[in-house]
Image (tube, rainbow, N blue to C red):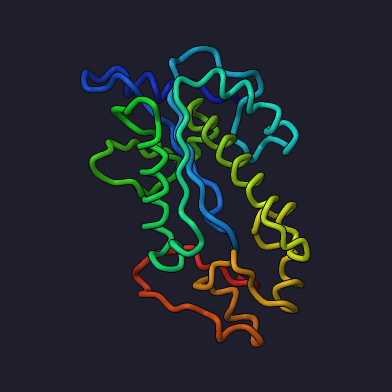
Amino acid sequence: MAPTYDIERQLLALPSTRLVAGVDEVGRGAWAGPVTVCAVVSDLSEPPAGLTDSKQLTQRRREGLIGDLESWAAGIGFGEASHAEIDALGMTEALSRAARRALESLPVRPDAVILDGAHDYIGPPWPVRLEVKADAVSVSVAAASVLAKVRRDAYMGTIGCDDYGFADNAGYPSPIHLTALAEHGPTPHHRLSWSYLDDLPKWRHLKRHRDPLAGEGQESLFG
């Protein structure tokens, strides 16, 4: 099923709501690079044909949608939190900062936010409607998922580190990424608080330890 405006219309039926933004993130589970959040406001016009959750689209199709999405959306905002912020603050706080940056960069301030997932990492003063799999059912969240994915993937393809395959894996776990880590260790773009370092005896001394309550998302090589 294609995403619809059902959730947007539910929120817009409230007297206090005139504008709704859809928000989604990419990069949460990567070992390297930033986490990127996109916020999209729509005027409920017909979305670009073929729009759906970015994970259901090929790279070529995602990239082909960008021009149409940019001309269709009433507002687009991006926010990022760097690998250094993730290490220092934990993923929850890093996501919150990236999402707030995205919302604050919109040309218009939304009155409500549809957030993909089951956990509100944005918080007050933004009124948030949580929706699991919102990127598959909400037009504005689907648009945010595509825009965020293409933006982050493009950035990861520009930072070099060819041995690690960032142009293909965008900093996520992959065989070439694991091989390069084992041989060369983490790059300046890697998250050093992630537990993949626990599985690399040669490099585990580089692990940065944070308060265990500071956030989630520390993926192991084998977990």
